[in-house]
Each structure stands twice: as structure tokens, then as C-alpha cells.
Image (spheres, rainbow, N blue to C red):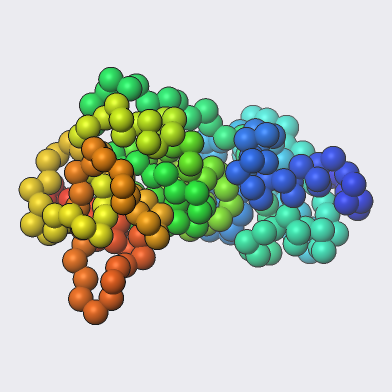
Length: 252
């Protein structure tokens, strides 16, 4: 076990940076947080484990786990106060440092297969919540754009309840550039055809935007909406869940 007590330690400084999308991209690591997520992961450890982080009141999970037979897993022990700085979502449980899987680039000529959701969401919690619903309603894949949060952001993984580690992910460039070369994209917007009355094709791409301006001013989108009564609009991920449920009903 490697004990770390200084905040100037390179490992500790790197882990602090893993609380951001930029840090995850820079270091090629992410931290899995949460007892349920970690227990599920250890049942099927399909990501390379780069290390385990504990404090004085936590026992190692990997030391006696079968996964340690196949790879050497460093175990790092931090003072509780430093551990809490790394544990940004407040799980108070062991942390696993994992290596992200490469995300393949979407073939620009490929047509949609099933319901593919484009998620140019910079807020990691919104991205995670969307992907949680996407997994529940049998979305075939998630397409990330340059604007998207890292799918390995701790807040994204927490909000997705681990769905981001299960659904197929692809990446593309900037959202507006993608729209210019793909004219078969549907957008969930405040103004558009009612999702409940829409004749959902089996194969299509649906884009979900951040709350606020939505897709106003963007041409080339087929627009769908979730009608509301008494409020101007719904939270973006709530509206997305309703739309995905509507699709799933048509193709169950």
C-alpha cells in the first residue's frame, strides 16, 4: 500500500484534475465512485484498473479480489481530508482509478440503426441523466460531439447510474458541422410535432440540447416537441425521457 500525505504529490494532483472533462482527456484516466457502481463493476471488470484509493477507515476491495490475479493494482492510502477532496461526489467509499476505453469516430456516411441519440450536452449531470433514460428505453447508441461533457466525468457517471459504462458511445465533431452534413436528424425542441402523435421510424437520430435557447436559428432539423400545459417548457432531460418512451412504445 502506498501512503500519500502531501497535496503536492503527483498522483494526488492528477486525481484532483480528474474531476473535469479536460483533466480526464489530459491524463487518460477517470475515477469510478459509488459503492453500488463499484460493486457492479467488480462483478465484470471490463475496464483496466489503474489504482484503488482508500483512507484509514476503508479496507481495500481489490487486494483479495480475483481481479488482482490478472493485473497488479496499486493501492493508495490518503488522509481522510485529502480523500474527500478526490471523492467529489461524496461517496465516502473506495475509489477506483480506471482507464477509459477509446471512443470510435462515427462514420459520416453511416445511416442510423435503431434510435441513436446525439448528445451535445456540456453539463455532465444532464448527459448522465439522459444516458440513464437512453439505456432504459433501448437507445442503440449515444453520439457525443465536441461540445459534450466527457462521459467519464464523475458527475456524469453518477447521474447515469452507470449507464455510460454500458451503452455504445461514438464521437463526432462540432454539432453544427454534423447537422450540415446530415439532413435526417430530429431535434427535441419547444416547437415541433407532438412526440405522442409522431410516426417514429425504426431508425433515426434524435438530438437533445441544453435547456435555454434550444435549437432556435438552426436550420436543417426536423423538430419534435413534448407539449406542456401550465409551464413554458420541461427540463431537457425530462422531455427527452418522454420522447424516448414514446419511441419505445412504438417499437416494443
